[in-house]
Length: 249
Image 1 (spheres, rainbow, N blue to C red):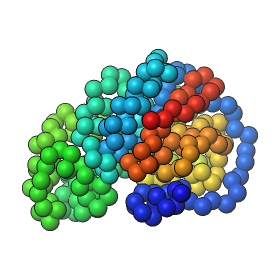
Image 2 (image 1 turned 45 degrees about the vertical axis):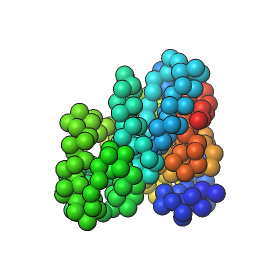
Image 3 (image 1 turned 90 degrees about the vertical axis):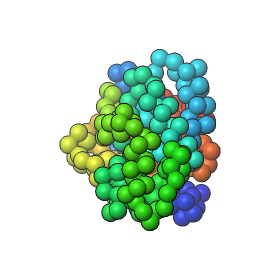
């Protein structure tokens, strides 16, 4: 099913992998309970449902979003405004936020790619109209609607967050290198060895970006992007002590 979603919707899909190399992975051990929320992609309705479920089932957990708040779904503006209201939420940069910022900085060069990959829905969610062939006025209108606070918030999004022996990133990480020294390319776009080669430094990685039919916890990796904009299923992983459980809207 994941392959079908990827082909029809242009979303990065989980690759067909050879048998994974297995190593002894230490148990999850977090310092503070937290909930990692998968790619929202403009589904404000699912986000509200999931936040209500988290408030009921994990009221003391830190909220952490793994990125891709915008594009593809119809309510990207609403999603951004809602997340910005959440005090103390940790928010990571996704590749779709990066494409949006690239469009704002270089509209004629970077705009076509972003608009093809869900940016048109984001533009519409801000009430902006214009021609995709006239990108500078479109950018100017977007900037005016987003406002300085939202733009500053987007630019300040983190690439990673660490809690105990769990790292949260948007897409992936090079399994042989320290995560804190890796740049945007692997962390928000992916890496070919991720999910094929386990880390040997004792750290777990929770991530989104790559659609999976079912959220998985395996060999040091927790995968939580269940394709909310297409499937109607938004997933979060609740980490508490040595345990992880899935919450879903």
